[in-house]
Amino acid sequence: MSHTIEFLSSAPRFVRGKNLTRPRSYEGRLNLVRTYEDKINQVPYRARVTISPAILSVTAPEPLSDEQGDAGEVFVYPGSDVEILEKIFIKLGTRGQGRFSTDNRGRPVFGVRFTINQIVKELRELGKSRRPEEVLRAIEVGVNARVTIEVESPDKKDCWEITDGIFSNFIRVKREQYEDGGEADKTCFVALHPLVVKCLQDQTFRKFDYAKNLSYKSPLTRWLHEKLSHKYVYAASGLDYNFRLTTFLQLYGAPFYQRIADNHKEFREALDELRDDGVLDRWDYELIRDPRDRRRTVDYKYSCWASEAFVKRIILFNVEKSQRIEDYKKFLAQNAPQEP
Image 1 (tube, rainbow, N blue to C red):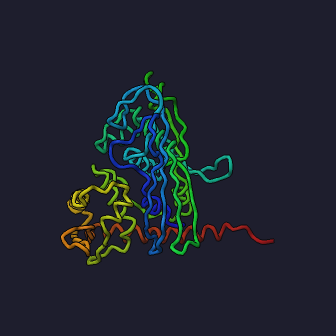
Image 2: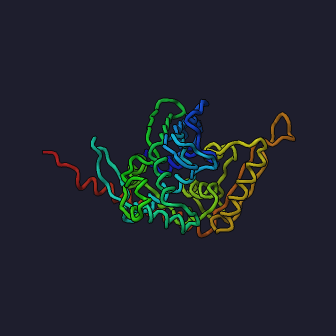
Image 3: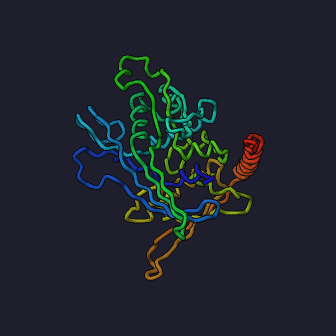
């Protein structure tokens, strides 16, 4: 696939809400399974995501949830904290702190060098206060939780599967060393997801304003901004982008409330934030009624119109991506092995 970062951002890999922890004695189904349908370059596909939680030791109240943790082990799902860290690592990696290498099987790896204090500072600038040990724990969740993505074309002729963590690897100092001070300034290394690596290696990524995205307080606003940046690539004055609430709820990975109007309220607030921030010029919606009971609303259809600033940015990013791919093809052709 050439649009792997766009594909990865569409997969509901994160658990929404605050209740991300399960006790080790939990007897319910641990693996969360989500199915969804989407398109890449107008080519439809079906997919299933299976999220297996990380198993972490705990000796104190859980920093990533509202629950009290006992000494022992707990199951923890990747949530918004891990999602934000992935964006920060991609941003840092593409701004000089990343490098390509290979693992012991010869597979390409893109790793990012950083310090825990640097991540704490990045989060603080976003208005998110986290202690070094909380950052470290969120990274551990991203590495140890496993996410399996299974994809098939509508005719079921093209199928593939990939299993990995949100992050593929993490080299760090021991957590207890933070108590001695100074260790949060030691250099760490995290390897990004293989699909991110492929996109960076093939030069098929489209530029994305991570700084603006991370500035939004709401996880839903951040997700919608990223989704529009990847999907609304034909943005132009007068052209709208349409989507349905139920479709985006599946892609976002959020629960369906008993009243769909409550889900609509959250989307409305996120779209208002994007409009007020100058990403959207305006947006509107229409109710989708139950054909058997016209009094009952079963879905919402949204229409979004991009702002002039967003249109200019998308056009610039489209041109840059096309030029980058063309340059990369020329590079491969010039460096291809010559036949004897």
